[in-house]
Length: 104
Image 1 (spheres, rainbow, N blue to C red):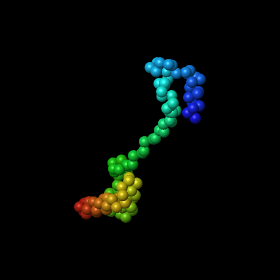
Image 2: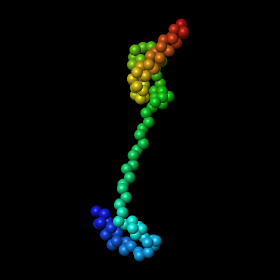
Image 3: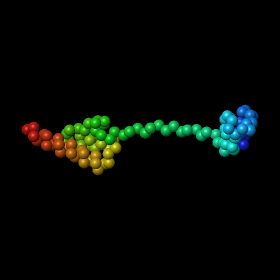
Image 4: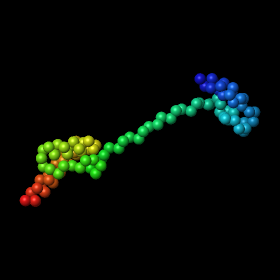
């Protein structure tokens, strides 16, 4: 394949000049090592996961089991490990319980 490319270049461009420093698309010795340029693969940047609650939906401030489950789902969706998500949900539940007790 490279030999065909070399032949084609010689037909299109002409023979290499005798002077090795003369302007020509390739230096005289480099034509035997010529490889066609490889196509670059463009990679799209990965989407960032929401890792903080400020970017995701805020957690529910409630002691109900439904709010507890929703808080776990929100944290897992934000990329937290399950154990950490449960701990955060329990913290929110305890904070809501304490706040409820202080209001009375």
